[in-house]
Length: 484
Image (cartoon, rainbow, N blue to C red):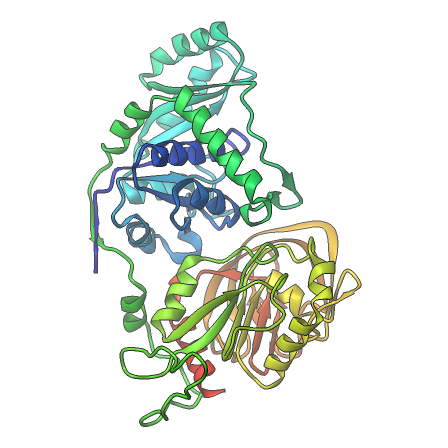
């Protein structure tokens, strides 16, 4: 159990989306990493894409801090878990500084996370269409919530030396120092499509070049020493860092009806690679295949950590390239991503599609979220998928986006009926029908409905959940892997 401690940290926020938060946050991470510092990357909210760029910039896993999905009480412990052994931490905000879950006040906002972490905020302001008014804007953000400490401003899209001078003069009255100026022409190519930036997993060398360019631009235009000093002024945090093993110990045991493991387990079979790794209590580790690669790049790092702590051997595979599931697969987890972009390639990998269908047919546990749900359908945009679910998926013009308060409707491999969890939806696809005979979740907001599928060992849904909020989910899943 590690202490939350006092890792220097700062939050990169903005008045609104599109101001340049990702460029500045990723650039700071890259610039400090290039100078030999161990940088811990974090992202406020449920976003999967930005943490991929953060990971590329720092060489460490990008982690999310989401007070809606996990509860405000887990924000600091999860932060400390990711920041262990680091010299500095950068937390990229979401939307505008005070924007959070709709109708929930400050819940899940960047401001709430900054307050929980006792971290100073750097406000990134798009100054392209303003001059002296920038002072009124910054003054408003400084004074709106006195508990949020705005410790500096980085001016983005500044047109000229004259423009910069006007902005600096205006901001003197606010007492907030200007810690960086980025010029309007200094744009880093970060292509987008229907759900935002193109993930790192799909861009490879281009993503590396983009992150390096962000680092160089921020290093040239920002006061790195001043920003380190600001990060070092963060208040001390008291408590313990999140730990997957301890989270499982403190969570309630998985309820029946799954049979218990019974007495002593049989000796593990010896295959070409020798005995499988074992858990501390001597049980053979169940192999859980985790989908990855360009089509399935969305997964919270804590999920794999919890599965491992629960007794799984987590093996990542790429459905675009691998024609077989990992040897000895006892369970399958398929997270989010962009299968709609790779539908033809996924469909062409018929051997793997049949292997997934056979695994589900024999009752092995399969947990699928969003992209995983599409992959398990009969077809996606007319192209054959795994056929595990008697449902069809297609692209849509409508964006479905938002937090969800949900309750499990059916007993399944993740939860028993009545279990309440919070989740997030983010997709431009439609699955018909939207729910099976045994739905996965009942959703209350924004409208009452049921969605998803619980069939045999399969739990498939559009809902992205964060298992750190309910560690028993991982334990229940792994127990089912051992008993199916």
